[in-house]
Image 1: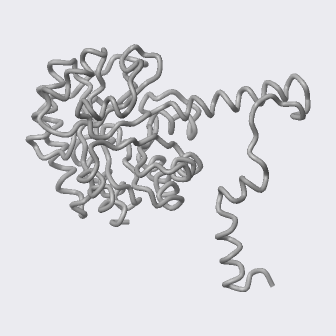
Image 2: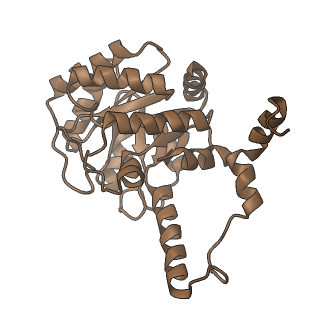
Length: 286
């Protein structure tokens, strides 16, 4: 498990920036790894969807998230940087969450300063806890980790000027990195000049914040980890709905105008060759 953390730390040292698409289950994690990315994030927004079929309103429990993270870490060797929501409670809950996330195998996590239960700020304006309470959570997270390579990121959902103040305070408190959601393109352009440490940034399509910008553009501005939190979730959901609408209308999938992976290609992607080799090794194919 620690090898993934060491690899992430090494990548952060060597690279100007890292692109980290976000997974929400073991299958999406395998797809990210198969396409050659060096690191991936996770999305509480996506996990709310695939586990509960619900919007991101803080309904996921620590147990549900950790179970999914264990499956994801078992499915891939690529370092995973996980969404730890608001730490699932106060500083004591944060300490437990960090231990559970570390045991699941993630390479790092971020904790946000929203009031509990947290929610996606695109759904409802975020309310934040006090700066002092969040610093207590950061200290609890740092004390709870047993592997110093485990990356601890502090996210703030405060308004722009307050977010900058909080981000710098969180870095002073020992956070390895901070995460801020810019509300405008101007904020996105200015943030790296005003934050005294590495920044984790999420990019969102058609929100008017990062339109026309690539991960490289953001890396050149000074952002260290650039994620795409919900794009793969939306692409997959669109494809599934498109397929089922066709099937409902035609009662066959022959002639479907979307793309299919071939049966044998899926088996290869999902790891059938490894299973067959294990079968030979352990005499299961006799």
